[in-house]
Image (cartoon, rainbow, N blue to C red; front, side):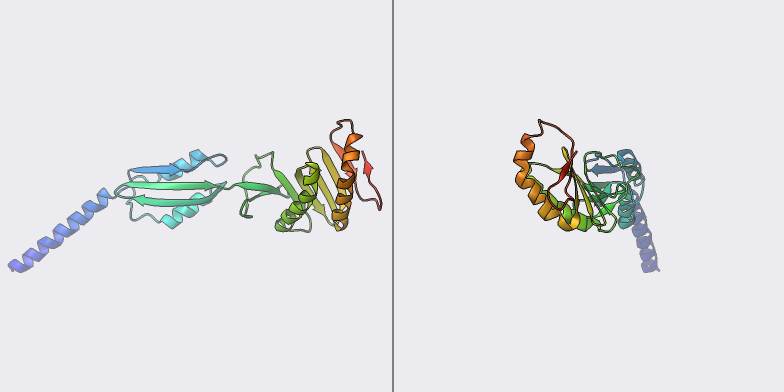
Length: 217
């Protein structure tokens, strides 16, 4: 009887301290790490506050990680437990590399992501009706390699069927995709003489679709 009573008391004591442990393990503070250039810092903070008062070991970390990553501009999130009562939420934003078809951004890992609006104005713009964004980015790198010799940086490139429109800060080219390497090389080769006749004129349109030569307006 004494042995039974002792075991019963021991169980009560274990349960009591286990419950006390639950109280001690509630979240008191949440630290947020990351740079917030385009994401909604207020919304991130509000989501983080939802952890306060929760049992630190009963939180579904994967679920909340996914919830943070649903916030526009958030590429990656990580939630770490720091016993006894602290959580750290680490946030990494997307780094947009170009705007695709005037609708979505593509980041530096070639991942697409959507946003409620398109706030970045000074960004490379790529568009096509028959190429994927990966193909267009490779095309951009190819075309840009030709224009580096004349110090022109592409700010927009569009391919519609066999027609290319190439825009830099000062020049806009129209050329057939099937002939762009030879036509751009041809233009670059005569560029020094061409530039000398411009008298510092800006915003020049160059049509390279002619069998020989090109037109300027």
